[in-house]
Image 1: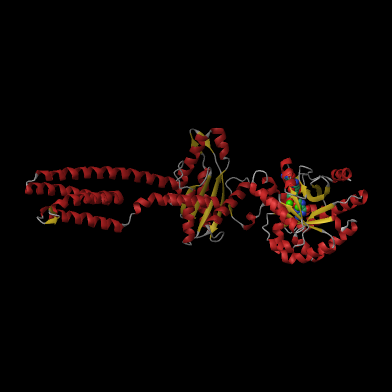
Image 2: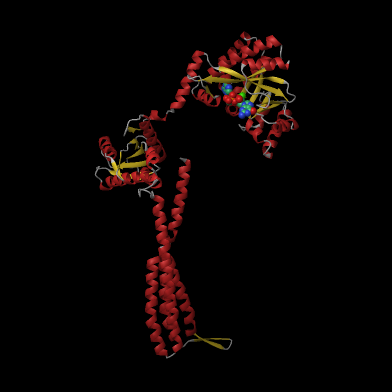
Length: 576
Ligand code: C2E
Ligand code: CA
Ligand code: CA
């Protein structure tokens, strides 16, 4: 919608520019006309005057200035024609034509034949004005054409999206009730594919002519406006109806136009559509939401697969079906305890294993993976993230606890926990219970808190996080660099690790600023006694740069993708 609004603003500006020529102020016309006519009144007086000015012994007759004034008059005539089109041209030409007999009579009276040259100058000026006038007319015609094109759909001649949006904006401003209907033809692409674009275009033209006729004749009893707003998309704006029954009646009339087969080049074409509508002000209070809501209702009508279905917008259409599906998958996975984890290894710069980050994994009912980037945000919004985090924590802690017992490896388990979860009263009890049952020492646990979420509640969270640190648990700030945390809070925050976000590592070798940024984070961390880990390291060049700028740890595909339990065990056995 934003893009659409920007386009609309550009179009409005263009239209303003196009019409600027015609908007010359009336006051200018009056002033120019007075000066022009005034000059002509003064002219005979100058010509007939015997008055002379003496300058340095040379005498200048006032009649010598008549030529200068005549040139000024011609300039006024040109300005009037340039800026005031028909009116200016008529005034100028009339005065100039009247001027010709005047010059001739003056010439005859003064018996000075040289004055007749004024007639030729006047004739040349008239010719110039005619050329300017017709040139201007051409430009105006072109501007009119552009203005018309800007609000008209070229193929069908119906108003376009811009014109429709203008009307709806206007109706909202005037607070007049109306309904926006989104119409989308069914199977139009098939017509294009099987019969060709020409037939497709003719279908659109034929249909548009019929709908336009219906709108223009007012046969529906309501005031209708039909626009083509996309390939096979139309908007109908219905006004002046007394009841929903009238509205539906009008909608049926438009739908019935499609009921009859269209005959195009001896082809009988049957076409149907899906209709969705939203009413102002009942369903939406501004143009953007009305268009969006009617469109949503149309999509729902389309989904039903029923031809010519008409649906009104309802609030539940705003709920994204896919999101709801994923949300249900998460709930099912929690109940079935089927959320599991992968472990992504973290290393120091000498490739010595530091530990693993536990990453949540989930499959849908068809056994396909749902990426965490998709289900984690949905779990967060649905208030299910605590349960997801706990499930991953419990299972990963059990696995790493056992692995440490078995191998005596000194490794860390990093888990992702939301700040809100940490601040809940039962979190500490739950954590202690998990550590106890899994035989995992707090020293082997690291909790990752995302920077952007942390800064929203840093003050309240500091106490809980302080308690975790006091237990010996490591605290990492995840996705560091994306959350704009301030230095002052960083100094007071009990973090033990900064995890530089992958986006900075990605850009580090082709963008000097990103490199300096990572280097600064590393220096900053070290000044505060905090280690720094770079996430998403994929290439040797990145690794080399990170070594040079003093990074402590890395996590990335270069040395290890997220692993299954068995694969992770293998890495541990090979490391110690
Ligand atoms: P994150 O915490 O920043 O985790 C790192 C993500 O980067 C993981 O994606 C990991 O697979 C990916 N990654 C690591 N190294 C590389 C690399 O070299 N190249 C590329 N292209 N990617 C790399 P994943 O597993 O898809 O997780 C995405 C995000 O989901 C995580 O980002 C985290 O914010 C969230 N998440 C995952 N598991 C959990 C969980 O148990 N609880 C919570 N609250 N969030 C989780
Ligand atoms: Ca993380
Ligand atoms: Ca991260």
